[in-house]
Image (cartoon, rainbow, N blue to C red):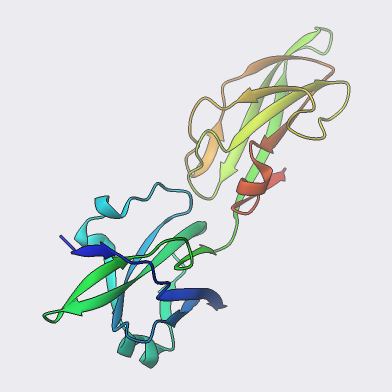
Length: 211
């Protein structure tokens, strides 16, 4: 268990990230009397409660290490977005006490590139029938939660955005590789497109590419 206490001082701030090949370097401003920090890394958007973090999830990083390496060097761990929280410490009997600051000056979100999501549609059935079976094929580089994507059906022309037609949610998460969704019944004149449920949020994490 890591001992901690709250602080009103912004002892860690101006956190920045610079890409260096397949790695990236985090830099920040140290408070004058801060000897070391505890660093926590999590997936972007994941819930965070400092009281629930296990000891092995923290990385202790000293001011001396920071000077030698000119920052905190991290490997780009796959494709996606991550959140780094850098907590200052004070020493008590030679042991670090984690200080929990107010606000988000000690927090930075890091992107390691966009994961590509490819999709295509396959229709089957006679052209003389009004209804046809349609199957959506998706290839993803990484796992995708079911609430990231939706598909939109519109008669006569392609949907321009997720609210331009009848919107349908995905019923299961997508695994890396090829995903074949259950067939759905559509009219011959229906046009289907895939969209992000939140374009601003997920557009920074994934690239949606029609095949």
